[in-house]
Amino acid sequence: MFEDPKYHLFRFYAKWLQPDTEDYEPSAWQKKDAPDGFHWNSTSTRTMYKEYNIEHVEQEIERWWDEFDDKKKYDIQKVYLYAQYEEQETWCQGWFSHWTFDVGQTDQEALRSFEKFVQRKKAHNYKYGFGEHYDDHHERIYRKTGQRAYCLMGAEDRWRWTARADGQSMVGFGPSTGDPPCRCDACRKHGVLRIDH
Image: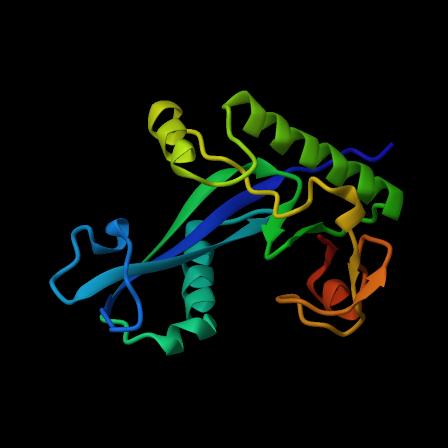
């Protein structure tokens, strides 16, 4: 019987200052503590390691930021990068997808593992009273409990689970090949299994 291995899950954050423009009205949090004529912007991603050391994590966050194409759209004045260790978990969130390491599990074992993961995250959200959609209510719960909602990005609907087309990038949308988990060339190259949703 397949035992779900748990891995080290990190979240990478980038926060930067950029000049205000006439075509964008920044929110209150974006203006907080920003100099006149500027506002904050940010992005984040999750990643997972079988094993890690701090130097490797620091190199990875720098590499991630270097490859972040959207930053070319902004006149970035100052950037802060940081990594936060989140937990040990079986699956890592991507953009409307999740992935785990391919350690020889069958498709059925991977699907059972992912189903258990989704149920754990749904139980977490219900335990702390998070609703289906992000709103100010989530921030009040975070301030009170220190817990954040886990956005499943549609994974709670099993009918959405699909695989990526062979040869498609590990990032972004592409045509589906059908039944998950994905074992395309890109997934095999990275040693992972992926479920898009």
